[in-house]
Length: 160
Image (cartoon, rainbow, N blue to C red; front, side):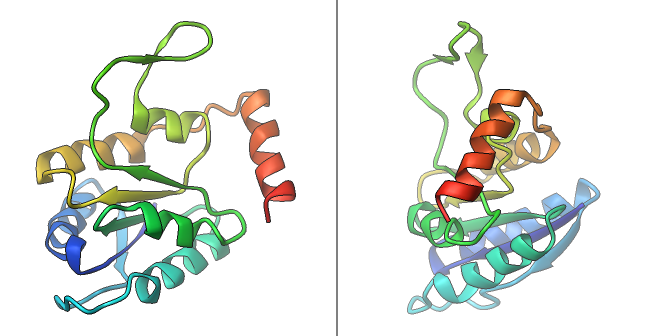
């Protein structure tokens, strides 16, 4: 599958480590920048092109690696069909769904919300944690459950 990468100066080093890792998993990767470390860069310059690519190619995914991941996800989520989830580390307590089943934060963003962009808070995770999250996120499939389809449909019609 096609995976686009983008970030900012705070995520630059981690992004350079995640790109070859994602390639090693068999994915076609395109780096949209930044291509050099510049403490004065602005994440929208890189996140907007990523969001546009994911918006245009509904079978693609995007991974953003930046300071907190929060502002970057807000930016990406302004594009129709883009559903960016933020990851800044594992949760401290086990979470459960309405039926009492244990939830994994990353897996549920794919299985329940069909997220197509993962925004990683590089200042909050180490390389190993980021790699585990990215791999799990990329292999987790959307459940396709009616309730999840209904909710995503409402996001696409009511929120944009």
